[in-house]
Image (cartoon, rainbow, N blue to C red; front, side):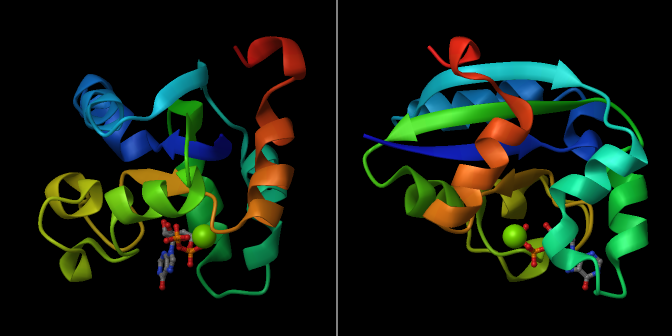
Length: 137
Ligand code: IDP
Ligand code: MG
């Protein structure tokens, strides 16, 4: 069984659609093995998104991720990393396929409602950034 890391981003939590997104996750066969709600500081967001630190949108992205509470998750399923990317849809909600979470809930390229690890290496960094072993059940 593979694990991936997910975030229900501040734009979605603020619009009270955490439950709707969790429903999609569970309906698609993912097991939620870790979950908590937190409000990142800009510095914590910068540490999480350090791979993007040279991008022009980095500062805005980190401020947005720190703009309100988010829900962080660890999801388990066979092929969880690719499966969750597929269910999320493309980064830009306008380009995302019908039926994907970003298509249905995303509001802009930045405020696209959800995050997902893009590789096993990313998941191996992102999961322990937020969770310790005792919190994954
Ligand atoms: P991903 O979330 O689909 O993996 P990444 O390229 O890793 O996309 O970008 C991380 C996050 O940064 C995106 O989910 C989105 O919130 C934001 N982002 C990506 N590209 C842009 C951009 O060109 N302008 C503003 N925000 C962006
Ligand atoms: Mg990414």
